[in-house]
Image 1 (cartoon, one colour):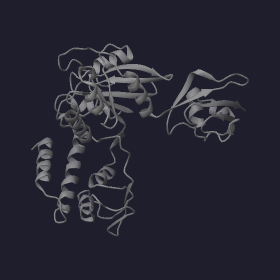
Image 2 (cartoon, rainbow, N blue to C red; image 1 turned 90 degrees about the vertical axis):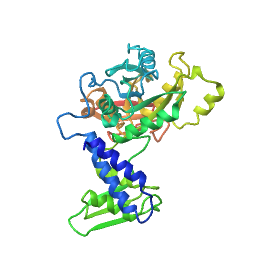
Image 3 (cartoon, rainbow, N blue to C red; image 1 turned 135 degrees about the vertical axis):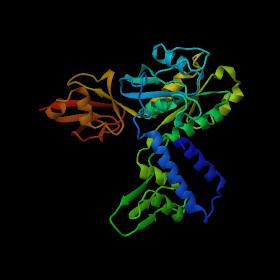
Image 4 (cartoon, rainbow, N blue to C red; image 1 turned 180 degrees about the vertical axis):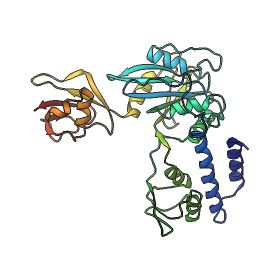
Length: 368
């Protein structure tokens, strides 16, 4: 029996099993077994890995990478071509794009790489089509555009989310606040600081047992925690990526229908063909990437607003800023003066290498 068949068998059994106190342990075991099988698809033990392949590995450029994921013929290539000026084959025929097509768009002075990925089909995470390679590239992106046809957005959205979830991608989520620590002896210790509303202790014990964690401490601080969250923490190979749902072809629907589309969380309705609402998409992309622009100020001169140094949130210290300019600058730094949101004083603040910068801060570097 293949891995995909085993997964289908377990999923069918889970669907047949009613959830109650008597079945919680059994369901926990099934979820843990399912996660192990999914792991084989994410990182197969054989030589044929899920990622890469001819046409899928591309050199990374820019400060961040955005990947287009969607079914064939939803307008990914048209949007890519108009955003970046890079030619990506456009046709009404399905599967026109057969490889990863890279391009670059500049937003607020920051070069952002766009990857037009081949259209996926249902069952992609299980190896159908070239879905495994496509999703493996998506795992490496900083942001995913899930491009949907406005005439059937919710059904396609659900299928694509399931494919990405099955490949270890968690969309618009953060890692759950759960700690699992192994120990040499003492059995299982499970404690929580929030009510366990979606999982019980028996189900947690079943998951731990399946992963052979008979001696461990579990601390749950995640509200509405599920057994899937426990599995994600134990597996440790999940990728948490922001996503925007790009609802394309709004030129084919009414204003009333457009109002309904805006109720979908993280959605941006557009028309790539007619170039409608693309400015809002670019603004939403910038917000989702959560980048930090820092302007330089030479001594005795006005700040240079034309070429900001763009940093990633979480890597935006003065040291990161210096390294982005030249690796030797941090070694020569005497102090920096910062103006903006991160500074305590409007007149500027003298800071060191560990100071964390905010978006649109202005920095003057004083060398030794």
